[in-house]
Length: 199
Image (cartoon, rainbow, N blue to C red; front, side):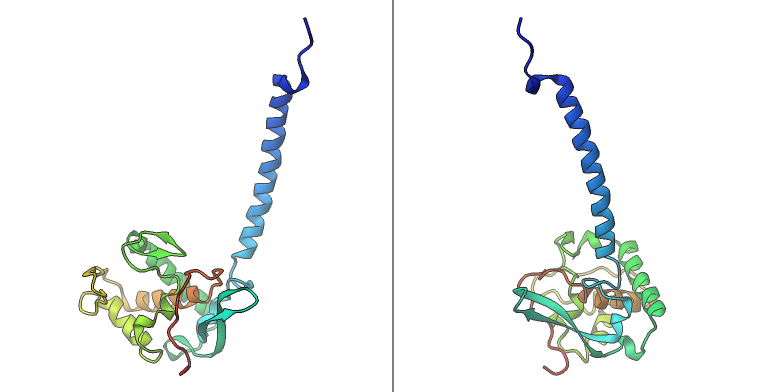
């Protein structure tokens, strides 16, 4: 009786499976730490929360062949310059409100969520707000009374009244402004931003 070939030995493949699993587990841990560092606030792709104190635009980058966020001159949200801690608190309130009100049941953020309502990734820069000067007021009015201030674009879809407080409205708008400054590698593709700074 001939000896079994090494490549058909069960023990060999069992050891290979254990080694590959252990190696990939280490790779997963390293990638997790790398991802956490890359998506933390204050990095190249994810700006500090105090970016809500500045004008944010979205321009084509020739080198990357895509549109990227551009942080401009000072343009504080609601007319008040916030410290990094104050900005973080307001953006965190907005993020928690978006989660608590279950906005993702209808909207998407970074492409994740439901596709019933518009993606919110660059909502701060949405040209549907008309112009830069009226945007904060229009967003506030819409969030406080979405039925009266509905923008259905012929779909007849309307956002329900979520009974959002004034502070939560400011938080949501801060969160959306901060999100618009995140470099999303050109997502959403083909997006044309609201003209900024009279441009």
